[in-house]
Image (cartoon, rainbow, N blue to C red; front, top):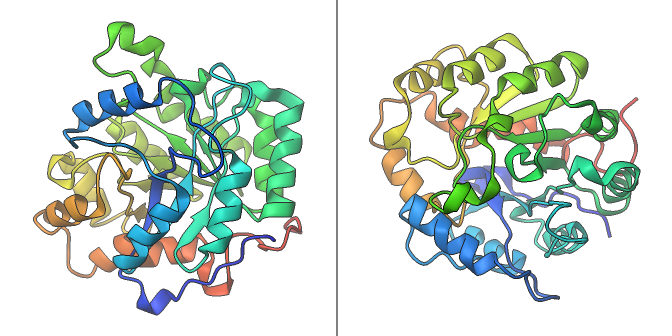
Length: 308
C-alpha cells in the first residue's frame, strides 16, 4: 500500500519537517547506535536520547496535534542495509498517515542499485522525498555520482533534503568519528539547484558556520528552502531571524531534529525570539503545507507517476 496523506491540515498546530527514526520494530538496530545516540545526546544537551520506532513517533506527534516527516539515514559504508529500512519507514508511515509523511534515504555510493531502489520506493511505497547527509555519506552534494538519484527525485516532483552545517554525529569523539564537516557547506547545493531547477530542495538546519551561504542560496534559487531543525531557536544567528521575517518568510520551515531536540523545547524557545506574529504560522505550518502540496494529498502526484 502506497502512502497517501490523511492529514487534517486545519487540526494540526504544526508540521515538523525533520525527525529521525532510529529503531526498527522488525530488526535489531546495528551495533554502535546506542553509542552514537549517547554522544549526540551529550552534544545537544538532550539527556538520555534512546531513539524511537515509527509507531512511537506517530503516537508522540498525534498527542501534540502535529505532523512529522520521518526518515532514517543510509550509509553504504556502515552496512549493507540500513535499519530500519526505507521500506519499513514508508510502510509504517502509511499506517499512520494521519500524522506522518515518509521520506527515504539512499547513499549515492550505492550507484545503480540505489537509483532502482529510489524509483521503487516512490512508485510502490509513495515516499515524498529523500534525505541526504553528506557528512556521514562522505560526498559533496554537487558530485556527479549523486546526479542519477536527483534525476529520479526531480522526475517525480519530490523533495531532496540535505543536511548542512556542523553535525552532532561524531561530535566529541576522537577524530569526530571520521566525519568530515567540509561536505556540508550549503554552497555545494547551489550547483544542484542550478542543474535541477525544478527539484524542491530543503537545506536542513541553521548552517553553522556557513549561515550566510545558506541564506544566499535560498534567496537566489526559487526551489531552495531552509528548515530550522537541530538548533534551539534561542541560538539562531541574527541574520537567520532577519531573513525569516522578511525575504525568506515563505521559505523557512519548522523542524526539530527529534528526538535530539523535542518540539516542546523548540517551541518554547521559538516563542521567545523576535519573529513577527504574521510569520509564525508560516514557519510552523503554512509553508510546509504549500511546499509538500498537502492541499492536494502530497508532493508530486503521490500515486507513483512521474510529473509530466
